[in-house]
Length: 534
Image (cartoon, rainbow, N blue to C red; front, side, top):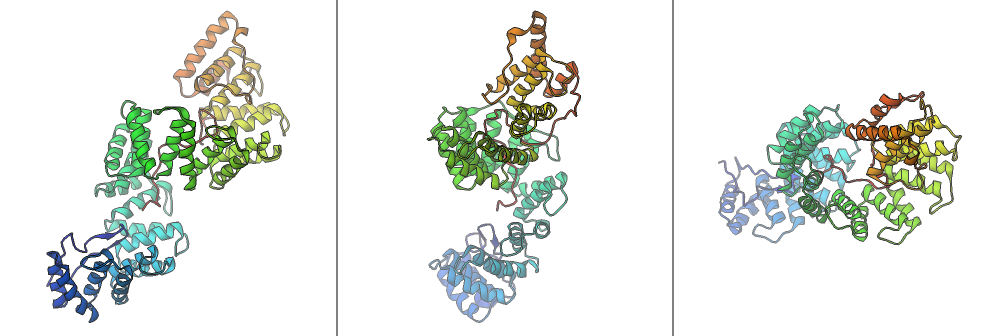
């Protein structure tokens, strides 16, 4: 006799990891009667029927009994008893029980936590085609838990589960195609899998679609579509979507800028413990954007993110510490935070470590160490590091002076939108240094004026030009150039059209991470989907 349980009894999932799908075709009579009783909420009768059938080896009864003890249906919750019954059914080859037993080992519920044992049971079920086990095995291969870390295996198991329609696996497979993890990067295929999971109501996939349309990955960039998907996901409480929706509202992407809504969504995600949102909220307090400026509040939110190991939080906390912003200045503590972030590959922290070594902050002055950190950050496309390294060449500080190298670095960082680099490039252009075809004070003043609109120059930058030295005609020309710079995102193209490119190699817009304020902090960006989000 075939039967099915009502949603109120045993047909749920274990923290989205192990799905129990009770089938009872061919079950013992007692098992069938137990299902019937459970369907009507009569758990005492269900227990009386399941118990003897389970003891006689009926694996459906064993599975049902395990679920009752795991969830507390008519009995006290007891994961140890649940694990014992799952094991009996698993040892009979039941893939549902194997998946659930693996989950208990992974979580340490009712058994001692043992990732290798979890992976063993997941593999047994996965080999029988159980999609949740395949998805769980994909996750374990991705992070190297219980099995060797292997992106190819992670993608293999995710594919098998995704093809069976499991939303969590479809989402993860989409991330693999987005990042080229274990598969060739393919934005169109990533979009297919995100859409498949989103259509099933998966909030992570809906959030990923918001990111896809915001960034134009595999589809034309569409801020309105991005906003729609982010709102759908955020309404389900997905913290990544809440944060990214807040960022869209803050920056007016897809709808007019709404600081109130931005603060509400970002704070909601931050208060739920989502580290990127904590960093963004800290940046908002530091800048007074959508909230009243409060450096102490900024420090508190950076600390929360840093405590979770978030590299941006660690870097930004280090910046506040070394500058005494919202907290007592402490260069030694700042160094520790920068090093923690740098170990995770955070290029801004590497740049900050270079600056600390160059200035002798929390350590002796060490020009070689400064260069080492700047180059590590520059290799990751970091605009502030490019600017700092170019400054060393412009001044001959710890290196042989090389104006050509300096201009190349300032141009690269300027192309990324870094205001201090544009200020410094303006000085080089005004003085005809580093292969610049001719000295052009009007162009130099225009560049420095553009830079000041983003942030005032700091003492570490090259000297500020004096506009009063301009002739009347050059003053008009400088204002015209400034207007042209403002209206064209490619500032270098405008500059080169009036002065010609430098005699040395002229860099186009490089890849990398810029920072228009150049103040040593980072974060505050839309967060891409993550394959480790379960």
